[in-house]
Image (cartoon, helix red, strand yellow):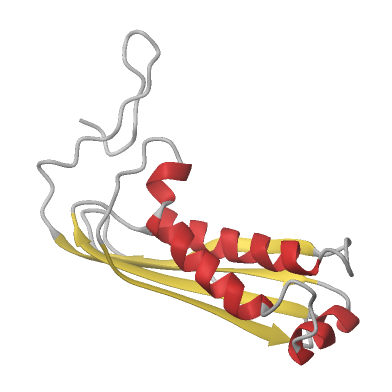
Length: 159
């Protein structure tokens, strides 16, 4: 069976059969950013957002999202993740918040989607918590930075 999900003769999608793949250590890193007004960065830094701790809540939302990726994206396998780390860092030069995630598993399929989902949901959480003061925020640059393990080997994004 192909590595990719395929359509059967009826046009129905099928989950990829990973039963014959070896259990190996696999990991993935992803990044993204929420660009905002400098005043919004200052508000988050002071901890004055009406909804509370923006960065802490975004980190938690990203971790929770990685664990539930299979519920959000059709045909993703449910995985017993061994590590999920999400970092949200204020960046005055952006201005905004840089978000990164690292996910690991010992399993038969990779965790790229879990890392990307963690970053995406963390960014969406930041937007939600600060939208009352800055509706012009933009979520940008969500991408896979690296993955390791599995039959396809390692991947590193261009800088």
